[in-house]
Length: 336
Image (cartoon, rainbow, N blue to C red):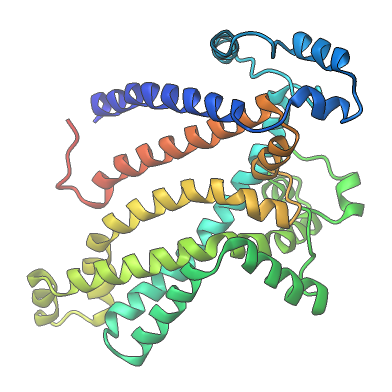
């Protein structure tokens, strides 16, 4: 398994290299001049030309790419054109926020989607099955931005149940010194229940909005896989031996039905990172998604490139971990 793992790691190198080429090319195709955006529309052509020269934007694209890749190998992701802050500093501050949101969204998707799928499979072709699949269909059909705005109106503006945006209340954010920039975890590490509670309140709506589509997909996949497994001979044998229904479902059927669900979870988690662009923008969540969104509008090349590369890297690593986890759920799978 170790040899297989390292072979897969080496296989990630050409994938990430190809992504870097595509991202670098597509970013340069975005209409607009970052130098003019930074200086404003009334800037003179001479000042724009000088800024372009200072930032190296007047060099050939191939030379700019080689310089950028050389910086990556040295651990230098460049400096934001707009804010003049090192990209790596912004990334260290913002990525934990997106990771916290994605983990919370995936937790919601699993806690709701898996039981919903199991319930639909066990009560197949019943009203319970129809209702569960209708919920899944509605969940997968709702755009993230629409759901986020509806939730914000109902639960923040109308009923004041949850805070509308940001990650902490303004008063708490001024006095709170984070450790990991994952505020719920930081509140636990600081032994501060006020921070934990407030961070969780701010996390609920964006996590539910972001996790609804993965929840629906997981529910449908769980149902499909469980229906197939429940019809297998070994499940009928377990029932014939007199095992209770709960034992048959949780000990015999579910574990064998989890392989396709795990695949969906891995793909969905990568999708959460990209879907966070809309969710973070709607809820003013200071993560990688809103950072990339701001970078696109400001034509901030280093920010866009580094943000997309980071999301791509996490996506391929998560899928590698998913592949490696198959052997845990199915001992018949061996990696060589």
